[in-house]
Amino acid sequence: MEDCDVLVIGGGPSGSVAACKLVKEGYKVIVLEKLEFPRFVIGESLLPRCNEILDKNGLIDIIKEQNYMMKPGAIFINEDKKEELIDFRNNLGQKWGTSFQVKREEFDNVLLETAKKLGADVRHGYEVTDYNNDENIVTANDKNGERKIFNAKFVLDASGYGRVLPKLLDLDIPSDLKLRNAIFTRVKGEIRRPGDKEGFIDIVIHDDNQAWLWVIPFSDGTTSVGIVCEESYFEKTGLSKEDFFDKVLDDHKYLKEKFKNAEKIVPVGIINGYSAAIKTMHGKGFALSGNATEFLDPVFSSGVTLALESSDKVADLIIKELKGEKVDWQVEYEDYMMVGINVFREFVYAWYEGKLRKIFYSVQKPDQIKRSISSILSGYVWDENNYFVDNSKNKINALVSII
Image (cartoon, rainbow, N blue to C red):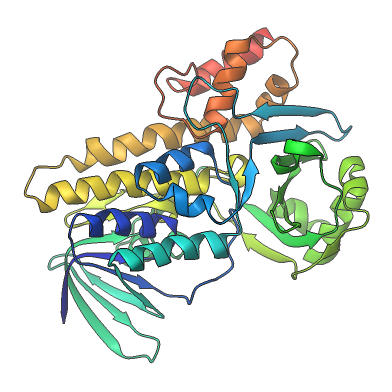
């Protein structure tokens, strides 16, 4: 049996940033990661709030060194090619008004390698199979199938879609969001926007928003493209995921022109029913962070933002607890995280209900509302000065009713 101060399950951004913070404070940290890195994962568009957290944790310079595509904002495009540009620099005064478009296999690897260099003991090929919460003992099989046992003072589950502790402790609950598919690939050779508009993410509305698409440009000239729709919308076509992908692009005026010379460089992939929810984010001697807690929807690129926010917050609280200080995990962690999650959740609801579409394309928006929306979509969903942060649903509805 091996002892450590903190055992982190998962080497994605949430686990890596938490590990970086913990080892800097002198704690012995073991990170168990099931896969070898680099590995492919979607969720490639970051928000300015990510930069703020990376900066706070001394990681922003190494990310800047990677020469990722700068992301200044998002452009929403409807079926008639009408555009609404939301510039993150037009925010409520936050320092960071841009972020990055990143290949996650590269971004995640950079963060995990940084955690290694700082002193985290990172082990690949380890699959966690059991967790004894009473004694805080984690059992895992290594890449050779050998059983390994770890005794930790604290266990952090940052396993993302793997949702290790939620499965072992029966913490998963159904999401209140509809089950949707993401069907995606990468391409090269599409027509790009000129100047600094090249780095904007396109969010493309298709078939009265029965489907929408992301278009994420990378600095190496390749682009991530994905379609999000309810499972039934895809299945009723009777098409393969490849033919469905091609048909959607060909049926949309903007996409047909943009991708007329493009070619796929990876096979078309699919993720089914990605939304997830949780009974609790914490318990005696453990906590969950990132996508191991709640995953909402990719439309506003909230995934990595919530992963980094939760890892930054949870690491501070783990340090506090290991120092013998009292931590109110419900108030200081879960209640705090749910403020931001719920703001994003209401924006996701409003997106699929057509309310945000009405707001985005209205010409009557006051400048303060524009800035408030830009700030929310930048990831600043804990800013109490933002009109939309408190009572988000009613404020969205009120705005829709007057524009």
